[in-house]
Length: 459
Image (cartoon, rainbow, N blue to C red; front, top):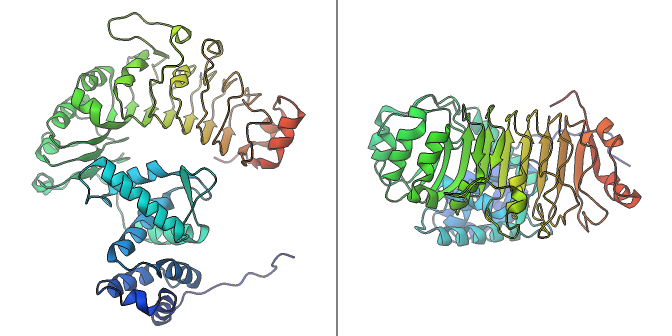
């Protein structure tokens, strides 16, 4: 029998909160280092007087006897995992990248050392029950209670944060600055010329989806090249000529992990093979490229060739894990994704002419297996989309498919073996679901229990 009455659990007063927290952490832990009592009090205050959160965090921290353990756990929970949806799998390497950008692992000068420490922290959080590890050991999930606590805390903090409109006057004086994060600063209209180059110690720069366009980014490319210590770059590029200038820089290609292409006014095609030279590329975002009709494949000094004439065993984008295509209304397909074997997250939104994700006719010549590592795919408002892929690939890690506003998509590339022992959630409009065609009855029976209907009037 379900509960019929809701009982409001009121927040505890500070004295009661602190007493409860100390009880579950334990006297031995609190006295194990002179810095821990002060850190513990900060942690307890951030629990906002919620008894269940206090008990959960208190128990988890009972074995943490160094100040570093306390600092890491709380900072990680506040700024990283709370940003992911409920019950969503978080790729471990993506999470570690966020920690590096936030400066949590700044005691390491090399990427390998930082990543190893990141995996150690994740292991600690799993053993402390702050993170859960599903069957897919490449990802983690945030415990529901801990996620609620993190959202509570960051929600309070978020109300105090304002939009970034311009840089402070004294920004150039931060000559020891190592990390600069300006992702999604849509309100930032400009960046002073010479600012980036004056911050000569910068190692990590995130300019993903920024609002500013100084000289179409060309002068910015030149400033980035001057940074001697730059090792991690995510950049937004707004035109084909700037993109060509960017690609001509061996230094920038070698340190770039993410690219956002936006606008590209006047360009009708993009030579996607040029991305092959960006060896560490793991994230690709393209938006508002209204004139772009297609992706070409043309190696330097050679003519454009068809995808079917390329060697399908060549993994050109081996490190690419996340692709988002937003409001590119003339694009018809993303067939080049057959060369991204480790793609994990794919979002295609508001592309009016998109007919296929991977074009039909690319099925021959080499036993292609795209989407093998795909975890989530979101297809939103693609009125002409008819196909995702011609044949059910071996989805080894798939967890979620979201389809909204795709009335012509009558079949998903699934069969009864696609889910294996995993639960693959499919979300979409009920009318669309009822008209889907299935490989056989066994496939329908496999996925029917996991379908979640969405209100077509929402979102």
